[in-house]
Image 1 (cartoon, rainbow, N blue to C red):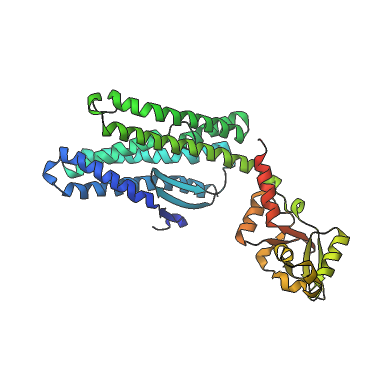
Image 2 (image 1 turned 30 degrees about the horizontal axis):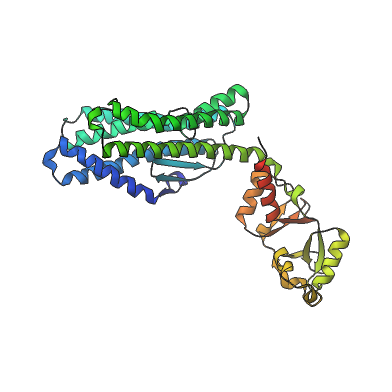
Length: 376
């Protein structure tokens, strides 16, 4: 939909579903408040749905601007079924920055609610502008209050995480505490929201909350609870990932390699590799400069009786700049380098340019899975 501050904004298909739902529900309420509108009430309701998600976008832009201010890259902003998400690619360096990064979103929603309230004072009640401004004021107050609840993945959960991180000095401890509070919050929403609706505390009489309304309330509570529970679990997994990422080191995962020239038969190249205790082959020119990497999958595909007649160059993949990685890379920097140039094997070189070995993407994946399986 655009690139404010250089960050692309996407609208998920689920947004159209919730926009239609808001249009239908708000249009029904307008029929009671402004019956003279007739069918035009749904056009007004659609405008409200778009304006409401415009407020959500402002909320997410607050997170984005704060992240960019702290030199944290933002991949994208996505508007979806229940609000929006700012995909910040790196973690805050300090708990103070994490707290600010989380708080600015609800703060902007509260400011918007105040702006709509002031604008509401300047229009007549019972008119289309008055109803729209009142609806936007209340909806932004709800967005702010909901996001301030102290459980991941909500902004309040990230604020709680920052507080625990500051007290304990351990970001993982903050994540665990905020994630479990988030799960408790999910259970509370699942049980409490239908009970509050039936009790009439949310503005409707208990006797009116029967039949289809009760089912819809229960469905809404289940969806909200599922989103919060899943988000809390994802936050735990991402924290565990960040904790174990430094264990992924290019130097430790690299296979020893032997250099062979382009016309070397595969059987001879494998013999040399076995003698040297190596598990990879690098094709080099007569001056020893690397040209390509022999793919492990291609070797497996050649029958043993054919190997004396197949040159290694036939099974090799030409080296590109992205397939050369430093032996010093580790953690997120290593994964970023592999993501930038997808391949099955990479040439690992020293700072001097000397060949260190070959890194297999399959080895990185196995190490990644093994690290994630270990408890924090």
